[in-house]
Amino acid sequence: MAYSRLIKILDRIAEPCALTEAEEGSESEALESELRQWKKSLPPDFRLDNTDPKDSRYRTIFHLYLNYYYAWITMGKVALVTVARTRLRCHMFPASRPPDPSDAALRQSRYCAKAGRKLLLLFEDLTKTRNITRFSFTDFQGCSIATIVTLVAGVTERDSGYNARVKFGLDCLRRMATGNMTAKLGVKFVEAVQLITNEAAEKLHRASSTANETQDVQASASASDYNQWAEWLARLEHPRALDQRAIYEVESAVPLSHTVLHPQSNENMSDWRTAGEPYISESSIPQTLAHGSTMLREFQPIEYDLLSGLQSDDPTFLMGLTGIDVLDFSGFT
Image (tube, rainbow, N blue to C red):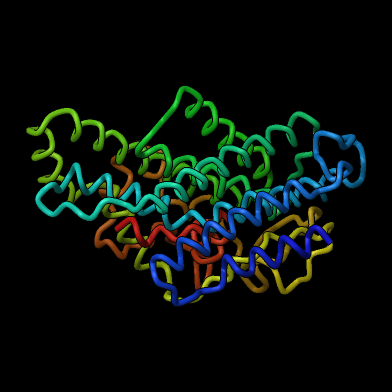
C-alpha cells in the first residue's frame, strides 16, 4: 500500500503538464505536502531505524525510502541545474545576465540538494549495517544520482561536510563496482562530473572575487572543459520523453511498469549490460578522465565520443546506470 501511494505521487511528478507559472507553483506545493504526509503516515514497522538490519525486510524498506528521496530529486532537478547555471552565467557573463530564479525554483533546488544528502545518509546506514551489495543496478544508480546531485549543488554552495559526502558517495560506488567493468565505467563518468563541477565552482569563486577576474574567465570560458563537456552531453542526449518513475528493485512489490530505464535489478547479476551489448573493456575509457581539468581538451570536435569504443546504445546505457539522463544536464549548456 505504501509503495502504491508513493507511485501515484511519482506519476504526478513525472507527468508533463501545460501549467501557468502560478499553477505550477501550486501543484509543486501540493506534491511537496503529499510527500511529507506520505512519510508521516508510514507505520512504525516501516521506519528504517526501527528495523533490524538482519531482517529480510530491511532492504525492501531501504528502497522505499530511496524512492521517496528520488521523488524529491525528480521534482527539483530542473531547478537545481537552473539555479547553478544562472549563477554561473551571472558572474561569468554579466553583460547578458539571465533572470533571477524564482522563489519556487530556489526552494525546489534546496529540497533537491537536501534529498541528495539524505539519500547518501541512507547509503551510509546501508554500508554500516553491511547491507550494501555488489551488482545491484538500483543501489548503484541511486548512489550515483545522490552523488551527482551533491556535486551540482556544490557548484554554488559547499558546507563543511561537502567533501566528506562526495568522498563517501564515490567510495561507495567504487565498492559496488568491484568486479564489474560496466559499473567501473559508471564510476569514471561520475568522477568526470566531479572534475567539471569543481572547475565550475572554482571559476564561480574567482569570478565573484574580482571584476577583472570575471573578464578573464569570460574570455576563456568558451574553451573550458566544462563547456565542452556540457555541449557534448547535450548533443548525446536524444530528445525523448524520459520515464522518470520509481527506481525498481526485484525484492519490492512495485509493478514492472514503474521502472526507470533498466529494470534489471537482480542482485546476483554479474553484469549490467543490456541484451546483445558488447563487452566494455577498460581500454575504452579515455585515459584523460583521470588527469585533472585538462581531461577534455584533447577531445575535438565536441562531438568526440567520450566513451570511444562503445557501440550503439552503450553511452545511453551508461548514462542510465549513473542517473545522468534522469537528471538531464542539457540545461547546463
